[in-house]
Length: 291
Image 1 (tube, rainbow, N blue to C red):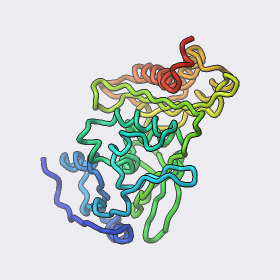
Image 2 (tube, rainbow, N blue to C red):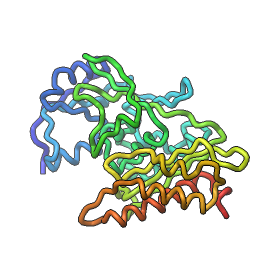
Image 3 (cartoon, one colour):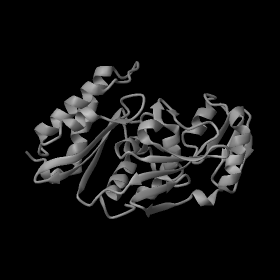
């Protein structure tokens, strides 16, 4: 199939982009960057925007910067930018591991980090990372100016976010993890490049052999990614070993309201969640999980 007719706009600045969104957002105007999520839905006419605002020419959105203890990711940054660690710490290593699970190489060279966040597919790896690390999303509009939206408020449901129709997601901010942080990721999909059935991000620090500052987030299993506080509580005051990780995985599965369809039952997905939580914790620091 071919997309429905639309009017194409190619702004060169953020201000021009915001003006176009202010004018056309109410007339089903949509932003396109990498287009790896939007274009397929347009081809099947599941999405039929009347106006397409292409931000590829907005060079001021093409940046990765570390400042004020955060990684600032501009809306033009491609997935492939993370294939080499952006820093020599735990965050750089985590992102370079996660990006390997995103689709295939041609898609990673075109799709964008912020586009994935704005699309909010439940199976998005970057959305799960953002939820785990309590990222902040910078949204801008001509009428309302700029506002920061924390991840816990940003992701609302399947492909639904807190972005207003006339807002542009200009930046995502991830905290730089301290050098003593252990962070891991795990995802299960039926084939390489397929959408993940479930995934988990885990991080913690060690003090005297006991875990602290724990974070566990699950994606792909529910309508939106989120931190699983019940699983984090299961790690309090405990050492990093298989028994501890199994307790956290059990707590995560109990807390999840799983998606299900004709191909994947709720029980099957919960089983995958348990395994992914354990593996993410093990991948965070394999040297400490032999017991």
